[in-house]
Image (tube, rainbow, N blue to C red; front, side):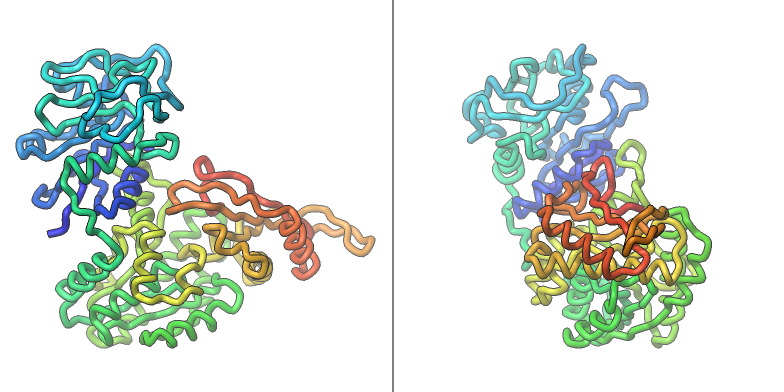
Length: 509
């Protein structure tokens, strides 16, 4: 059975980062809501996340940890997790007079403490809390302090129970990975064997046992997620996999033909379906982002239902859902609220009569790419920028029409081709163009114009959970802007999006 670190989510914006850091240690972990603790058979350790709640608030999250403590499973409480354990153990937690937020330095580290081994006195850490621990329960000792926070870290004497008031998972905690490795590897005893190769082996075995001799239909998008899912399934069940590539009319320029050819070259059994007219009809007069997403998702499912019924005895629908999709789409009491709906998350309507399988739902985007590399996926797909399921439908603000789609396709093509020809494509995580629902005044050939405005966006990221805008060269942006305005009829102004996530999202809708 696979070793696992359990991360209990209390709603912190940093919970996903904890998971990312643990995965970087080649240790598998999963995030669960604090009130939905799974079976503990293969749990090597538990990390309690931070929270927007105060441990002093009535109705604040209260996990049931007795069984975990009884089984002597190592526990690390981070921020809220540390405050909660101190409070319920009989210590004193009080609201800070000043919010303790930002950079701090560890002025005291207990020598040779197993959690802090290898960390240096004076190292920088990141604080983010409104409560502070004034006193510890009986049988607990201080293991780390800062100039302003005496109890920055503690341990239950003789137990593998730890609490820290800072966030080791964020970049600003310069030796945070040392602490996490100490906990995950040395204290919990994880063997760091979770690699792309091991994931492929275990997932292929899991898929064989789950699907057995039944047929699977998979929707391909041309992106890395669905492509890796297809290769995993193909490796597991071979010709039992039936792939469908739907042209929803919202793809990039020439994408349908190009991607379909690539999939045939990979040896996949793929059917191409032109359903663009059906999607356009479903999107008519819709301008609200969520309405558009839901219309696209509903139509996508309906198309699949039609095509799946043409395949005799198909029992499963496979999807390329990845972990950030699941995290952003599933809201629980306390933890992260829903950001936006993803049409490939959460199950299927009853009328489809298909079971769902999601082989990538535990992976972050960079992990999907590593698995794809392990499977021999071609560079042009492996390193392709993320492209959302709703396609250009969420990059056209306002109503979607074939004419507006054509404009955006041309703009997007010039931008992406420009990035590739200038050697910039692989330097950014995602690049996109957005057609805005406004016109602007321009002058072309001594004549006044009143035409479309487009926004270009390029971001750097690791997994899409956070992102910074890419500092593309000014001369490149100038050339791309000029090419777009000269070559795309109906566009007279180009702007560049310099917002980061958070507070913005990567996509505009």
